[in-house]
Length: 592
Figure (tube, rainbow, N blue to C red):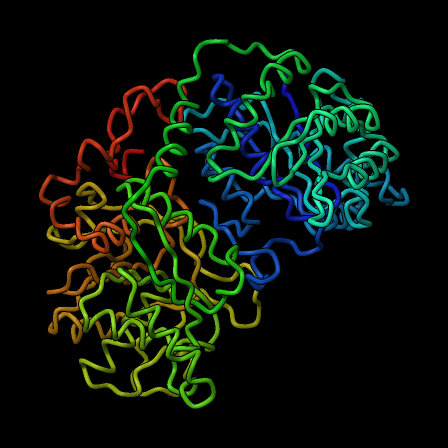
């Protein structure tokens, strides 16, 4: 029988439900269970594809091309699973499916209402999606963690709460439990931990018919016992059902924090799950990772030149991919956020201080990363940064738009095509080095890009990136773009040592660029950050950090092996309960 764990949140949104849901899944997976995850977003958008990154952070892309909430990225990284677009449920999707049914006449003349029709549709969706295998071994999951976005009491999440109120009786009490994540504020004036917001939030939840089994309290410092007992008394739970999730040095510590407070043993009793009590190999790996990240001494700084730099969630996966790679080579990562518009000469006129600060950050960093983005704002600044990286021989990685702009920069400054540009920014250019793709439909914004997992084939054997991928002949990575490098102009670049080493299966799309006579100048059309994992960093990002730390050449000469002190121990186990990784050797992605 499938076990369902619903994670709700109270007091404020963005409280860390995603990390807590991922961590609960992780500790259950470490007990040998198969775990899947569903994220519910109460907004009316069909998917996250049309959001600005300032709304909900970055848009995460799945293998099947689903554009989803960044929490699904956390689930994939923590649980090492592969989700599909239906693991992200939105109000828009539910209403769309119900309205389509109504138009087809499936409700036989009934009045279609929120209760029962919308709530039934939600329950059916969850039950159906929970059974879809997400691991490589194609076994049906045993536990489904469901995260309900927003805050309890929001108007828009009401139908979902009501659906789960009914659901707890449909699947029986021993197969459903509710974790409520709440905030314990600590006003600086008195410094005492306040429980009133949590009491109100739990009262509201119980008024809606859901009684929390575990109350997870987010706080800056560990919960005092008296506070725990007070919550227990006012919120109708035992003291051991109040779990403290205080701020920790790295998110890899959260699963350990929950495990230490007996969450697994509570859930196994509450949902009577047959959990093996053997030593948990997988959590050893998490402990090693978090210990290592606390002990790092050597630093490595990467300049992230983007246009959404005011809000770090805009580049969540990019930052995580950099962190995974930095951890793999035992360096502490410092990300320098640079708003690309500040690098442009116009800023020198308007705000010289900003201009010089931005250039100072860029020049003092060990490596430069230009991530993806849409729209013309800030693109010239990115081109200036790429020019600096190319001329100063600074390690550089361009992702998606970053790769396209590297092509523009080279065309302008080496091939002498001063007006070279992407038709996205200058439709009239005489040298359209980046053009929009035939499948792009300009009339429709949502879901009209080249999305999801596509194959890239390496055209040469001496490519640096190919070696980083374990000398793979091809790689399967996730895409999200509307424009592509113009394949007709390829030969002009090759003559000057700017090589298109990776192309798609048909040989029409340029996927990977590398520059001769440069320590590390790589551009990729796909988004490698989406498949980066803590124990399996993404090769393009690993290459950037190795080059920035001055270790790339020795790494390649050793046949892409890290020195022994950088690898994880044999005990640490891999992300699947049975197999063991004794060495952090990057597997070629073809046989994953």
